[in-house]
Image 1 (cartoon, one colour):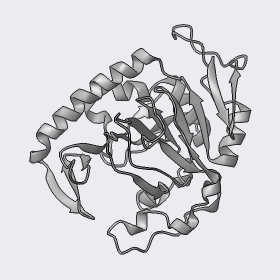
Image 2: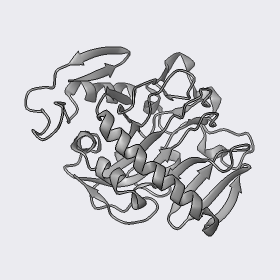
Image 3: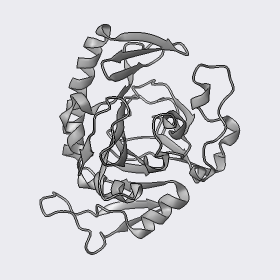
Length: 286
């Protein structure tokens, strides 16, 4: 049985009849979203499920990510390095490495996409616990991967400013409303560690006004006036939790002021048989 969080209320809900996990799963859980969850997603722009993935599953995934991070950092000198707003980026084949600002410029901030060189990530993204909800949120019987990334959020790691995902993708995808996201927490998130946060209901306003601060990426960040702080929800959740959220939802995170890292895997799904954002390969799931 998993813990379900809806609109500020947490309850323990037994999986609905007919939606129990396959017998080979180590724990019983409901894979598909319930009607209550679907209404909450439509209203609030997100749904949280706690304890979806087991401790052992997350530990194995983190071990694979450790190897992946070491490998891409070791090869980063082979890629094309450049700066955006003073921050270090490296394009290594079809992957983009974002590094932390000084004094942590050797530490990864984001790796996108992560799945081409990490089969355990692709295996997790193919899990029914993610695929079945994504079929519902895309409105399609079959889905594929649009993109995925690892947010590393080391101790002292920088913030992710308020933004929507739709403006990043509007020139690459004609199906913006069919690009739901899911975040999988890879570490226990504690207050002060820069947990994921959203502006509840902000997905209903379409693409919001962007910053006009003169930065290179100003068009991709949401203007501060669009953020209603009375509706901000921050997630300090255990590892293995998942948050499904709308591509138009305003979201971000503060800097990590704790002594512990705060890793997360974020993946975006889409209708089947469509190419991914960066590699342009079709990665059908489920």
